[in-house]
Length: 394
Length: 147
Image (cartoon, rainbow over all chains, first blue to last red):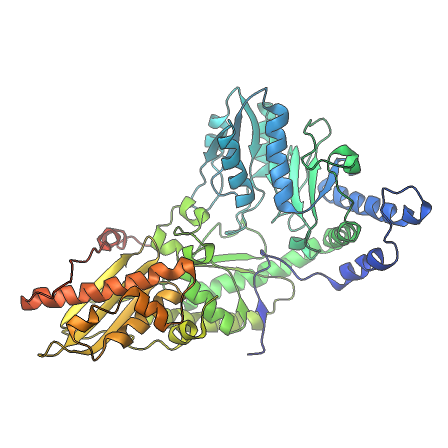
């Protein structure tokens, strides 16, 4: 099987050749440390500044509010732990949603072990946070609301502006984990009252190992990685210049192409959703039908378990992902699918397919055909399906 | 992460299906945890397992262990079939990743459940066989809901 259909772009993306091209000289020619004194390092320093400007411009921030990190998880950890540290005297209560990425959830659990209280606000059956519950959860000692911009599994886009307004109204800081949304959908930190934002390079056709945290001027959080004076003394460590340049380039491209690209990806994604629901019985779409990331489709197929489906898809050259327990290393299926109200056995049969601009209609047709075969095959050996059919025939 | 044998039994599972009027049927596991195994046994008058079939809802390892378990018990007497332990199934598959060992336990339980059903139907006692624990019942009510 030579064919490769990569439909896991929420996991990571192909680095654009233009990005690699932009990065290369910063490995081989302008390899100087931007913190150094001599003029040889100037071009590296300039490149970092330019990337910072590009990234700031995309979200309506000022360049000095952009901090480079080692990735999305680091940004998330920094935002939560450093806010807890800096504002812990004011209060020890944090609000988040029940469907956050583990970089947020596990950090919250760590904070809970260290004297903080966390409220996990529920989402509706499409995965949208309940704004009334969110506002009701705010207490005098609430210091932070952290809600993701868009969900990594089911793609649901959160009402950032409304959340920001609630946070702002109550004088609570608002952080958003925008790893899946940044440079995929428009975000403006001022319009949305965002105080901190996490983003990652490799989800936007940039390199791995580079991330960003936006910190609004006036937010008092301190360094999380101690050492040198880089990043206005807030994030020590020699600048990952090629990574920064690569992320900057990816953002520069996204700024120009996002709208156009999204139109065609949405069209293809809608075609995928329509085809799957039409050709595969007992399938359901998870998340909101339209208010979702342009490239995200997430399904549940009843009576089957996700891991077997992924193995067979892999054998057909198709890369997807599942929220089944067996693929997560625990006994429970995805916390996101459970949070939107799916029973365990249905959540076990989930499949996430995330497209890119490289995906073709032909890829989708092939994928849907293979998927239909695979699911029929797994159902033919499923005792749940056997029982279901028996009941139907009664 | 899986051995070649596991992949072979997942890709070409032996004995998938049902046996009508089976001598014994056992269903174990729990949809909540993502694994349900059902094993059908056809047992002759000399208490020899003539045929075995299975249906499994679960991961690659769950399918492979069911497949291997059915292969191992065919031709054995009910007494011998008791020795088809989870370890025997695991070994026959050249091992399982540690997080998947519970799948082989489930296969052993499914065999035991089917043997128990056979023993009950025929009013006999199979020495060393204990009543299996099965908890798929909680899934029954939920199944009616429409998703």
